[in-house]
Length: 177
Length: 102
Image (cartoon, rainbow over all chains, first blue to last red; front, side):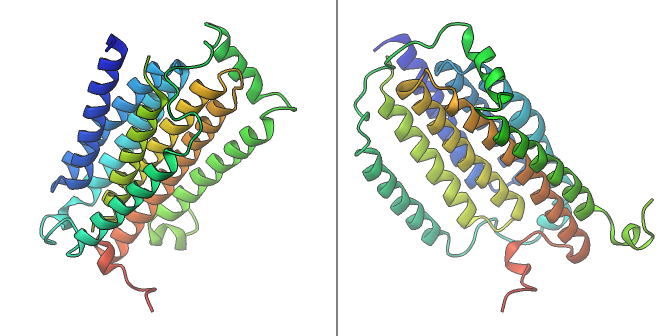
């Protein structure tokens, strides 16, 4: 067992444990903090996969933006949650059974992947060309310019939509500020 | 070297943990957290397949970046919806948000 394998196993265990705590923790703020641990574990796995840029984006976008946004939402809505009883459905065991069935199906599918037993990557990506290739691919008309622009429009629509939805009702009636 | 199967199994487990969270949580914010876990598992799968099968093509990383953008949009709009519902109905428990349930 090599060092990389040990790193993978430790990181994977921490990620999974944090994920279980996210869905099981009775306090929602604790769940949000465990979510950060889980996202950081996935960032480490990205580094193990030679996707350094994606690891940085994972830290910036997921941990820096989404997790903090979730913590804000938890804090803005927590007063009510203190006295509304259990944090899980009474029929949570049905959800558990569904998740286990889904896991079984996924594992059965994964076993049929031709490269399932592949012990290692086929070829090393060039050491430095990955990021510049990614950058040019995103603005090349013949490659991924269209998905890139669609993602930009989606982000703009989400920005405007989030502002319009979260605005108080009386501000909408006054027609603005 | 780390076999590809380890990544696939780990992401399958993570996806199912997230799915359990989506199905079992009563709080809408908790459901969003489960969705984030599921999206992360998908990203892990995409990057693992890119690294092991087609390291020459950059498509795997581009796809992951698009998923990042979609996840950010989804989180911002979802949390705005939750805050709006909280402001109008003073609850974020999905059992009690039943105005449109027929």
